[in-house]
Image (cartoon, rainbow, N blue to C red):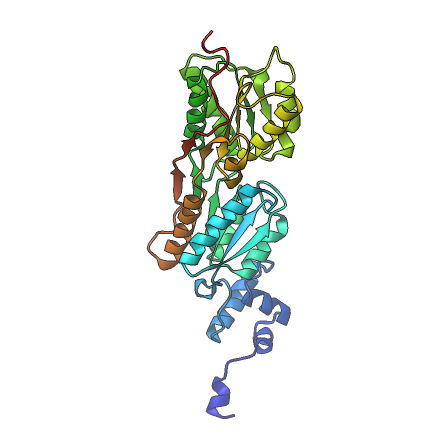
Length: 344
């Protein structure tokens, strides 16, 4: 055997024979698959490294794209989040791929194995929460991630970016109170979600600050879509003798449902009913009347998430959790007006 032949890199089949494991198992370890016992992975990894194979969980082997995990792409809000990520990723020379999670708060079970195989530059999870096991697996494979608008209270291990939902809700409610409204209603998001709870708490805090009563009967829970709140809005508004004069919708899409309910009941916005939303998605200014809403800094949130991931790769940031809560701003348009009985 020549010296050149003795020093050639072994084939995967040679490593399989040397370690006593199947070729399929060796291939799984090389490609970063998680379905291999730790002890087996360690033995095969040593053999791969000795023969100059680069495992997919090596940080240097990451693909140059960001993976964005969204519940669905059916809403304008989701598309605006994606647009913000695309714009920010372009500045860093990164591409973007998307995954539809199929659940509001958690990717499906197959996602974790898939993302480890894909080994992206980083992951942005929207409206999500991860278990401790999932967090550990992402760290084990050197895949940095950020949760944007987390569904629950982020753990001490999670990096997260969110808007200041509580103060945004206070500002929206104060605006309605300043117009003389004393009977205020709210349609919340799912109470399991952090942002929905924060917006409800901010609404209540503003009422308490003004010495106004909180009416549980004027509170309805919905999702963050238009179709999902029409029935709730109809319930709030159907009785002209016992209905709010103003409603805080916890998303702009919810406000579209409130508009539809008001149309069905021949209620004029803002003459009979003032409406405030949350998000300031692009369509808010094209509703009739144009929607008063709390602007959520979606593009800034996307930029902050990308910055965390990029800095982790560059080594300019420690591998510790980073959190940011970005300020919101009230945008006053035409859907709010002085309460009709305010000057009586």
